[in-house]
Length: 283
Ligand SMILES: [Fe+2]
Ligand SMILES: [Fe+2]
Image 1 (cartoon, rainbow, N blue to C red):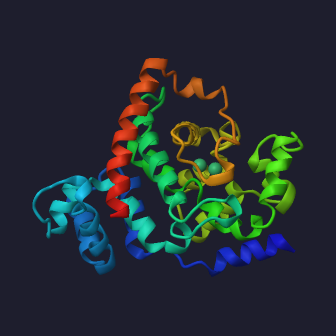
Image 2: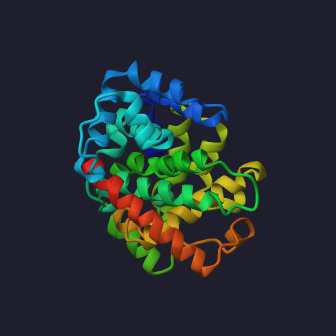
């Protein structure tokens, strides 16, 4: 019964805006041009307003007001523009508090943003070709299922935490499954299909906690987000009760043979970048 309610809820969520869909498609193709991105933003008044708000926030300290979309795009970079587009057309996903996860309003967005930034940095270390653009977008999207499940988990948070603590469930995701017959990775994939996301991003959402189960062709991307997610949680930027309740798969080293020193450097770079972007979004 609950499962049908969950799917019904997803179907009632608004689709991604045309501009967000176009930007995601553009990120997927290797020949995306600066002009094309600028053009998509300019045609969407709400997105233009959001992009200008972010670029003019005190966090970037530009010292002068940016009023042209093309300057904003060149300053923020195309990956960030796609992130802003996804977040600004899905306020019911990123803007709400996640009551079921004891996570406050904005926490999912912050967690997604740091995961995206970390995944983008990590992508460069992959043993196989992996595009930073895909890693960033997948990081933004990986936990969208939590916003769907939150209301169904609400009231059961203690039960779920207890299942993890007593080892009845090995992690928070298995606890979700015990309580709801589904988990946030599966619910996220259903929402991702509703949003008509491409297959590689759907795989990143579906398998970000179980990367070894992903179709082989998408594993570099899925493992990348798996590691980016872990880095965000180590930084203390998780989603409430579920933070640090999901482990890291040892096979991640097959795709990302990252040394301790390199990981420290990634951690530091990602933290600095995140602090800047985070205040920009809040301001
Ligand atoms: Fe997750
Ligand atoms: Fe996550």
